[in-house]
Image 1 (cartoon, rainbow, N blue to C red):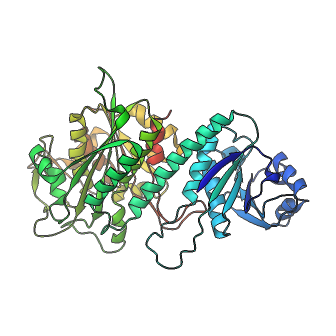
Image 2: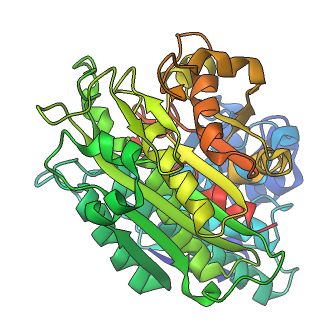
Length: 496
């Protein structure tokens, strides 16, 4: 999709569809809507007064051949309450415009954001939303693909900020939007196609494209290093494990004394059957997306390589497939981690924390002084928070506060859960240093406590994104399937 910017009045823009936002608590009284109504010879007002259009959030009304406009269609989009308006909501409205344009087979869309949305950040989120809305997850369909992609998204803003600032916002939004969609594609891929080896290959390919150095540790290297908790998960599969290490080429220099190095660590289980502790068959197909955390780290690192963050950052993705076989790890087995701690494996379906344990510890060996991990880790967090919020826990309160403070910008909601020391008792083992699961109580928290054992004293944040990685229903601004959750969160962390 081509993206352009114009300061021409929207009435003079020739396009297939012109999208205009209307706030619910203003309706026909808003100054911007009154101007639109005059231009369209009262057509816009008639849609409101007749009840055909109610400006509730994401609701739309399509008017064909509107008088007074050069656009072939006028799309009214409900913006919800003005008091609730935010950058995150603006992103959704732009996505809604593009999704509705696709259904109307409109190839060119001009989007008129609300008047208070005339900044570089607003331009960025509009572009992110447009790219997000133009995505479909039907990549393996051989029929019924009608080529509905929007080809031109025109951002129509009034004169004000320097055009260079708006263009900068558009460039940034394009980078982030494409990174999110790249992440969605990875998580949507079937696991017979996206194996650990293929995930590593795609990391190399995107790295060559954007300026990432990609190092792949193979099984033999991990065996020499003693990464036995990571390797234990992969034992039941014929697919070899990989540890993908990402570095931004522009940042590849020796660390200065006292300079922080952030490590982003993402769970990369390309398929999770549960191993010997096999999962129920219902919805097991969704376990192809159990690498969504790893995909988000790869997408975020690809974006950061182009955006040149001020902070030094590396990415690690332990990639494995978890299957049952005669070679698979068993409940009751004890393995020794890279850090030297012994782990009693009670449940082989609690595999994500095992691969993250070795990756977090190894990140510190690489010089990391602050750790952030992202994983579809527990069903318990879904029970606690549903599909609205991801859970965030950790020992680095400064980063947690920044992540949560960014939610109104990213649109990716986070809720902090406690990790009191008393929860540690649930994962105490009688025969090893620690066991990989406790009882059912506080399952998301005890999983985080397990990871804390391997972060040790290094400031660390854990994001449990189970429940927000997939959308089974679709939304007005997005297709069904993988959400790409976490990319915007991680990129914004290094942007403010």
